[in-house]
Image 1: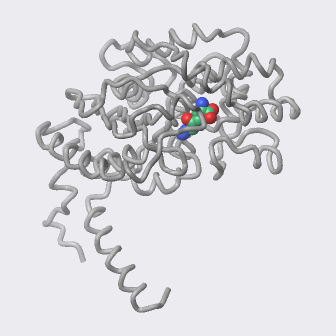
Image 2 (image 1 turned 30 degrees about the horizontal axis):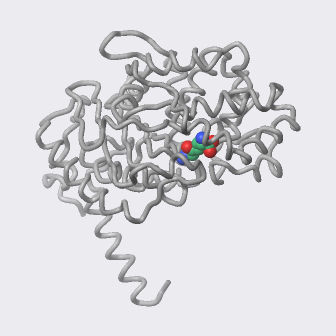
Image 3 (image 1 turned 120 degrees about the horizontal axis):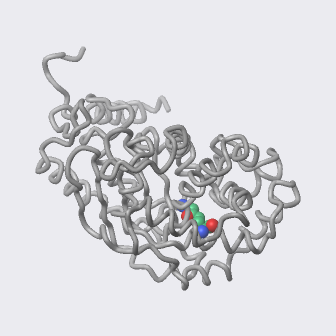
Length: 353
Ligand code: DON
């Protein structure tokens, strides 16, 4: 039985308080520093993406984070200002723009809202078991939305919007990464033709691929992603300028899909262990939203087998409970997890499982 007078270890370290305010900056910095050290240990277990040859040249040892609380000052650490390509993180922007310009009915006429449980570039479930992409955050879903936006919207329009919503005028197209992916995107080309054969994509396949790949090749930093995350956390409004970038309904849909589908076939595990709606990209970026609390941007280019930043995920896992960023904050979490590990070990040793 828990002693109610005795706070759990999570409660003692809590730095975003119940009013969602970042308290005790120095304590938060200590927690993040420790988490960074633990996360760095994961880097050798990961690999940079090589299926886009230009991404294979990126230094895998980089790691950076920005926490951008709605109330309080930003915390920036490590390689927080290094530029990388957004890759699938841009699918959140595609979704926002599609919802705002075309409406929910048009968007969910093209894509579903269910996790696929498959890899990000899978065609299997699209071909065999479904008439449209499972959700907008996998490659097939992103390509379907690009078809919805073309030709009314140009890449320059998206670039301008992205610079604004990320408060980062230096975001640009990384030509080398774009050219590199265009040469090796047979899988996305296959997905686009499959979408065309099913009547979901009714725009030119090559135009759609170029539009999609350019968006993936936009450069961001952990800092710029944290600015976008903060707007989502604040229901679509920039806290500093008061400017509304999207309806609160769009923000809510984006955050929900990030929680359920943002980490592909790792989404369920990530939701349990980290509990922060997040979208990953194979460039190593993570865009996270701790609702009403903070936007977060992470960069760590070494990836796990699902294509998510290996050190970035560990870093978020380490800070989510202690900083009270988890959607389902549990003051008992750390202690319970340790006890649970002991229990599982005990059961294993007794050969019951
Ligand atoms: O379409 C692709 O394969 C890449 N441009 C983006 C994939 C991606 O980022 C998956 N994320 N983890």
